[in-house]
Amino acid sequence: MRQRLIPALLFLVAITTAGTARTQTCTGKFANPITDICWSCVMPISIGAARVASLGQEDIENPANPICICPGTPIRIGLAIGFWEPARQVDVTRTPFCLVSLGGISLNPGIPAPEAAQWTRTTGPASSAFYQAHWYVNPMLYWLEVLLDFACLEHGGFDLAYLTEVDPLWKDDELTAIINPDAILFANPLALAACAADCVAASVGFGLAPLFWCAGCQGGLYPMDGYLPAHIGGVQSSMLITQRLTSKMHRQLIAWGYHGAAALCGPYFEPVMDKREYKTQMTYPIPNTTKINGTCCQPFGRTTILWGAGKEYPVQGEDFSYLLFRKRNCCAF
Image 1 (cartoon, helix red, strand yellow):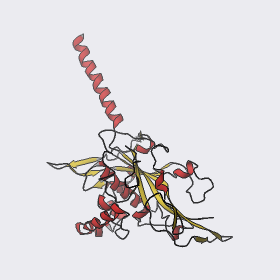
Image 2 (cartoon, rainbow, N blue to C red; image 1 turned 30 degrees about the vertical axis):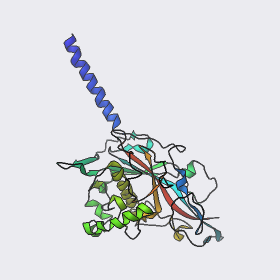
Image 3 (cartoon, rainbow, N blue to C red; image 1 turned 180 degrees about the horizontal axis):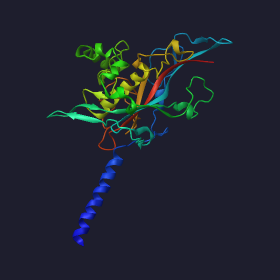
Image 4 (cartoon, rainbow, N blue to C red; image 1 turned 45 degrees about the vertical axis):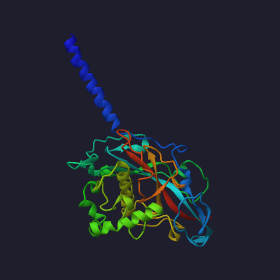
């Protein structure tokens, strides 16, 4: 009896261990608006070119004229307001259909999709990797009702808008050339060497808009898919995936431009992303609410050496979620 019981117990332990391992492959957390969000990233607030509240936060240029006019019946005259709106969120995950920003819920629709992978050399750390990513519409200031009756806020609620698992372009370098044929020009060592200047600029301020193919210290934006040629760590790789997915959303006209004089009366098509218009804040696995040099949000391309240390840990800390603060210029009536 005892001889039959021991194998049975071992079998039950194996099942339990396997089930635990499966539940740990999809991890996440819904961001707490009070404790997990660095609200100072909304700053600076500007009227025209004048900043009326900054709290030491970084900013890009604003329309020079504080008075704005928008066409209509009647013509509307208002103030040119500028701020950084928390409006989008990105998951970067190893497990297909794992919704990190929704608490680690797995959709599991039965659609085959490649899992994240890291390919190692015979010696040394992983040299390349693959991740899935998700794009959320998250106009946090609006659904939290922080500013009522403020027309410059995007209206709506939290919504899952895009999954790379169902996008055949995300897992194929050749197919993704359909939306970024310019990768032929910029996905080469010479063009990527210019990204060193973008890395320096992003680490002390914002990246260089003319170098639109660069992701600063994270490397190159092209091709816009989930394969990474250099995997240094999860934080560095997830930041590059976040930038690639955001650029991909612009190229597919899912994301629009909201900054500058052209956006005062409404957003506009921006197929080539201006990477300076986004600041990011990690909300999972460890919310990045600790300020470094007075800021806790990072422009696209900034090095992860300082703020990313200790943000990744085994098993439950290898998926990531980032809140995107989008530069918004608006004519407030």
